[in-house]
Image (tube, rainbow over all chains, first blue to last red; front, side, top):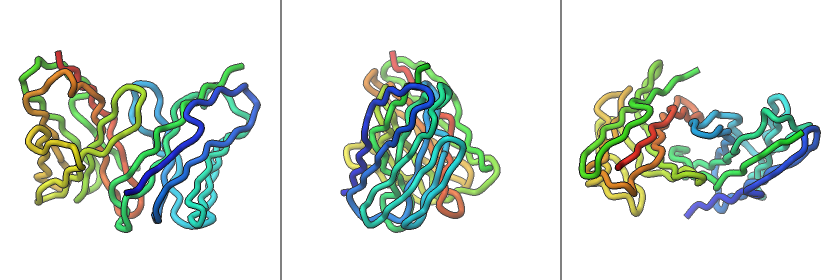
Length: 112
Length: 114
């Protein structure tokens, strides 16, 4: 059974600081996703990582994937208040890459 | 980008009644759609996989007779919560699988059963 673990679950940051969210998964998968969710809203797609060593960046967020270690990271650079949200990683449940298994989410709060 | 809509966005119903939630892919065809449930401050839990023209595949612990899924066309999947109870109150989110690796999520439906 595929399990996805994120840490930390809660993260309080000051503006301007850097931090990393970690996502570990238990079995082989060929794709990993990062999503953002604002309160009361659905999911916003941030990144899709498809191969070992993949690195993608958008603004202050950068995601990477190490399939050998079964680890993905979401790095936040110089945090700003607008980044406050809950971030989920999700892993495709099987080789066909269909249903997603989600981590518990990391709730990020950025304060000045 | 691809858009997935859900209707209604919010619904309040009385205990014992049934509620239907629609999930539509607006500008692409989706042979596979997924239904997730999210309780407050928790993650998304996969309920079932909906395949066009065939029966849905339910995750362990999800009652197929209570959560009826129909995927009658390449752009529409419906989830009907039958005989709803307060414990069914949740945020229901559908997603549609794109051509390649992407998944597109709908805006969600907040169900409140009184």
